[in-house]
Length: 110
Image (cartoon, rainbow, N blue to C red; front, side, top):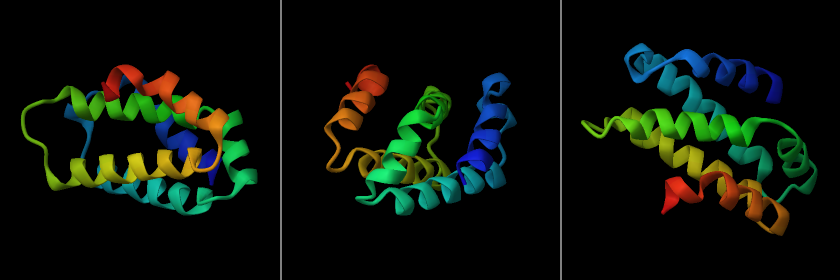
């Protein structure tokens, strides 16, 4: 799971919103749903994500999709919602992960 998601997110470094298709949003949304469900109060999976680049890649996704202040389509809003739910499950019951999320996203969430 993590490898496939990281491979998908790796392609985001050189992309802008102009390159995103509805299928791309749907794929990322499905990945976040999968991660969200895997992390629900599971310290082992939470620790695996903590050791990976998934949180920093999620920051990249959020920055890309929130940079466009024009129109927020349903695909974008669902992607953001599932990404936030993923982060919630990542840090649920895990204070070090809560700190990690705050450090990565404090400028976005303020």
